[in-house]
Length: 599
Image (cartoon, rainbow, N blue to C red; front, side):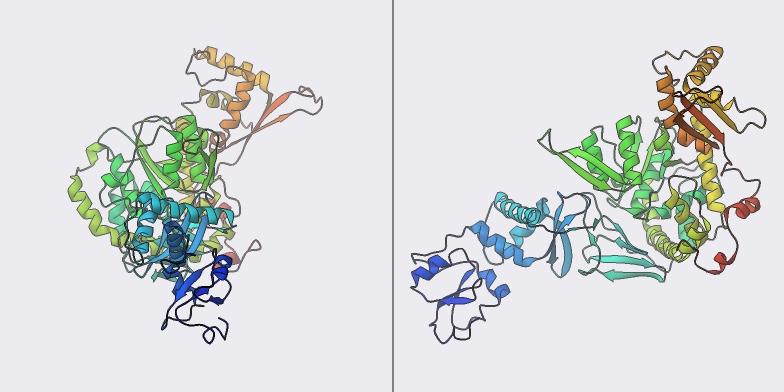
């Protein structure tokens, strides 16, 4: 403020915060000059008007009855006031149409989606502190629209906004989503509960996000074991693999296989799906709250996955190719597009990686890309399972949950401390879920498994799934039958291989022209099928390569399309765990803690 302002002014007077100058009452020329600025009335005893934060709350007003009375709208007064109450405006990196405001609500930081009704309620509640007038919801949404427009047009930086779990380098944060704003911080040194502040990762709340129980960070493995037993898995191997799969759901940046539960009605598959959701990303306090149907509408399905850290899909009966693509991109992490509401032309691009679990009665899971990203767990026969009423089960879960959650966090902390060494040891991951191989081995060792035991179980399970898929794709067995004796490689033109498959189909009395036949009907279709079936062949120990011959070479002519299938060492069937460890791990100085060359 100018030093001579008080000497040259008589109270009351007006002060322009933009220009740092005072305006005497009656100086209409100056009023006109500053009419678009932040002009406030100053009375004797008021604080220094140069402190904008203290005076914005009065709005840009002038004394009633003056000719230059402020033309500012109520919306603008509200906008200026709430802007002063907002700590930060953020545009999400996952979707540029997501604009958030960080506010302090009763002493707790909260991230508000500016498109939501909750944000409108906050504007209403906040503005009432200085204006008791009752305004319609459209008034508050107009103010929010101005905030969004300014953020989008003024180059607001895009930042990561997280759902439930955030991974910043080797530090993990888990949002308890309660009113206190507390986060669980997980590092290699341990686990602690911290109060949210502006320097920590920002978390948004999805439409179904519910508060989580407070974890018991001193819990031992007993509660976790009891929780795993609730899934009625077939044997110890299934329980070990699932234990790792479950804790890996806390890995925000890692593509984690989808645990799938199939079986007849009444086989607890819906319960298993709900248990996972309840532990990792609860949507309510009951089992029923924590499962949902898979929407037939692709737009709605994409939005549903985007809005939840973990989706629990219940009673799937059929998966279309389009749904399969969305699931695969959601698990691995890629951009999904959706149509904007009320528009056929505009599209919204959503970039996200999410965790998913699902169940169903014999749905079509034979899409190779999807099959490569899921684990179908084997469970006990219904004759070997004792039924328990849902109310009693929920009571057991409620008692177990703090211990189970706390144990998962402490196990993840141990896995973080093991990760670098394990990454050095696993120099050649075998699957497209390479990060899961490394993290899974670290988690398994944190749980006390033998070194390499998890990887052996994981590879065996994948091969088991591939064997099951062979029934859906008879051409796999037809082609592999050509590998007789010690033969390790086969090279054929697409045309010759197609004729061979037609002959085999005729011998097996398979009509390749039938509507639902999975046998290709032309050489071009065979080429496409072999590309799609590549992951299954690889699980079975074979590599499929396609190329165009560049020169005449004996039986192959220049320009012909060629298929080369090579038998590779199967990662899934070592003679013993000891042999497996010898080939998989370099048990040298790396085990003692030395850093490998790649680090």
